Every structure is written in structure tokens, then in C-alpha cells.
Length: 481
Image (cartoon, rainbow, N blue to C red; front, side, top):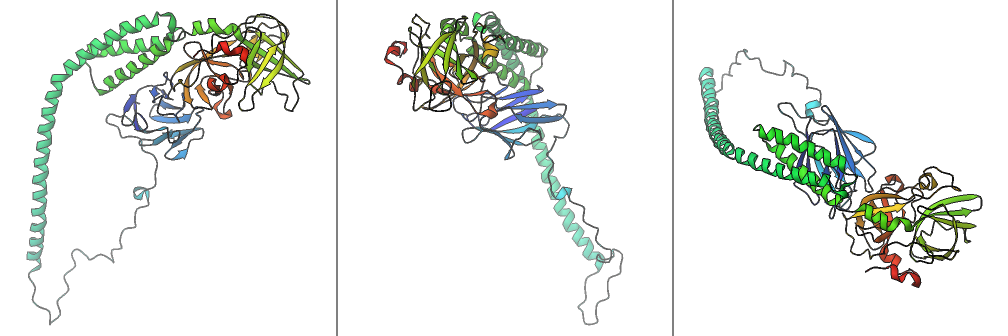
């Protein structure tokens, strides 16, 4: 059954979108079905909530948002049913609110169960003893009462008065109905004149955009988006068939507008050259192994000087006490050689630390570190690191024999404040210390964690502005302003 989501608050307040899909994803990420404003609805996560429609039943669930979801003012826990008119709140003061509606043709909308007078038990019928008998003879007036008019005459007068009022109401109502019918007839004729022009215009738009999709699908920058682009094209072809057959209505127009937005989002993401980012920087991303007594932990770091200075997190190279870890070793991406290293500097204000390789040599560095002050919500990013440690670094290989292989994941910036750069992407244990790259391939943040309930989808990182002021003098050349 089709549903309609009406945006009642937030940057897109007043917008309405109709969906016929069985799963509707909601959030600020460009690939969502209902996309909210990436720059203004900051309390809405990149992937915030999901509505599932099966037949005439709909449910909603939160998919790990950082600021939560409410239905009719109640926090959403797990999955719950949706009813026509339910209010869905996404996030807090900088979030958005939706009104859920079923779109039906000739069938009553599914209403939420509620207690009302209509559901209360019917009142017991009044006792016949309490009501006057319809045919009971009127009581005789006492001898001293004044003479009254005949009962039949009085009843006839009352009936005439009531029916006169009813006739006037009927006349007014009938005149109003006639006016409404005439107005609807005129509007229908006007709409009929414009329908054909609208359909012709939509046909031209779809044909032009199909050409653009074909070019997008063949571009090198669209790697990883071929499934999404193919889906958009198939749906456009289906709409073209309907329009060419003479069909056209508000639902089709809304769906075309929605596909326009999906195509624009796919085009924007496809313009980011993730292959170039990886080619320029991945060799400088190192897998770090730290030994604390009998325990060995893994993390990520990235080179900032040719003589072996590496940036990572403070918590990666701490032993939980005041002393240094027993042993630190690093392995750069694509190599099998473990290089001993030592901790040389730890930040007192941020989760940052610097280690240096003991062995003299020339080591790879990232292309550059750029100030994070210009990074805005909605901007695409890439994270390169070793999520899950040696389980992914060597694809399950033994830590003594593995060849380090870094992983690149794409995402978008969801919040940017002086102390935290928050992104929507995927990280896991072992990603700590991973560099966050902007679309130019410059480091704009250093991953250090995220909320447990987000299951790795909401990522916190130290902004590069905080890193730049703490870099050693030897690394000044890596800063690109």
C-alpha cells in the first residue's frame, strides 16, 4: 500500500513525499529514500530510521541513530507499528518531524487504536418508566387552569415551524452543492487542457535525464554505484512507459522529482575519486601492534614525515597505567616487514599520540593535512584503516606472517564543531588512529571512537585543526593550507 510522509518540522518542513516501496530509509545520507537537509537537520543521522510496509501494515524502527527517534512523543525502542496520522520525531532540536499517512483509494485509512467515547460501552436505554408514553392521554387540567388550544393544532404549528427551518437548510445546501459541482467541472476542464502539456514536458525531462544516467553509469568515478544507478534508470524507463501511454498524476510527478534528487545525489558521490585518494595515501597508512604484558592490541596510524613519524591515538599506545607499552611495532600497507617503534609524544588535550620508527629509512607519508575549519556537513569523506585489526589487515592471516592490507570506507560529514568532526561511515575495533580524508585526499580528522549504540556507524574524530597545532616541527611540511 502506498504511504505518504509529510515533513512537519526541520529544514524541509511542508514537503510531502509518496512511496510505494516496501522499505523506506530515512536520514541525511544521499542514498536514503527520504533525504533530510545535510547542513541544517544536524540532529538527524546519515542513516536514522527505516519504515517497512507489508500489505496494509507498516512498522518503523531506529537503525542506530545518534540522537534517537520518537513516535507520538514516546521514545522508539525496537520496532513498532505505525498508524495513519502518527507523528515521528527524528533527533532533537536540530532534527526533523514527520507525519505518517496511508494513501488509499476507496478504502478507509488504518487508524491508531485510541480510547474515545465511540469505544465506550453504549449507555443503557432509558427506562420506559422515565419517558412519557406517546399515546397516553393528556392529563386533565385542574378546574382552576386557563383554557388551552387544541393539542392537534399546537402539534401542527410546531411541525410547520420545524419543517420550515429544514426546507431553508435544504435549499441553502442544494445551492452550495450546485456551486461546488460547477466549480469542479470548470477546474476539471482546465486541468484536462494542461495535462497533455505537463506529460509532454515530463517526457522530455525523463529522456534527457536518461542520457545523463547513461553517462554517469559509464564514468570511472561511479565505481560502487552501478547498482543504484541501474535501479534509477529502470524506474525512469517504467515511468516513461506510463507517460507515453497517456498517464499522468500527482504521484507520478512526485516520484519523478524524487528520482531527480536520487540521480543528483548519485552524481555528486560519483564525482569523488576514491581510487585516487587510495593511490595517493594508502601506502602511508600503517597497522600498529602494541604489546601490554601478555596482551596484544591493534590500531591504525599514518605517516607524516619521511624519517618515520606516525600519528595515532593516545589510547592505542597507552598501557592503562603511567608506563609505556612493552613493545610497539608497525607495518605499512602492502608490506610484510614489522618495524619496531617507540612512543615519543602524547597529547594532553586530545586523543592523539606520535610514535617514531626506530630504524633509519625513508618512509611514506600522506599527501597532506588540511585545516578542518572549512569542512561542512554533507561533504563526502573516506576513512582508510584496519577495522577489526589483523582479522581484516591480513584477511584473517596470522599476525606474524600477514601482509597489511588497509580498508577504505566512504561516508559523509554529519557534524563539524571545533572539538569533534563527526562522520557517518563504518569503523570497528582497530580503526582507532585512522585518517579521515576529504574529497581532495587531504587529512581532515583522526578517528578515535563513537557511541556504542551506533554499532560503528557514527564516528568521532579529532579535527585536523587540533592535530596541526600539535605536530612536531619535522612534520610542518605536510600541512597544506
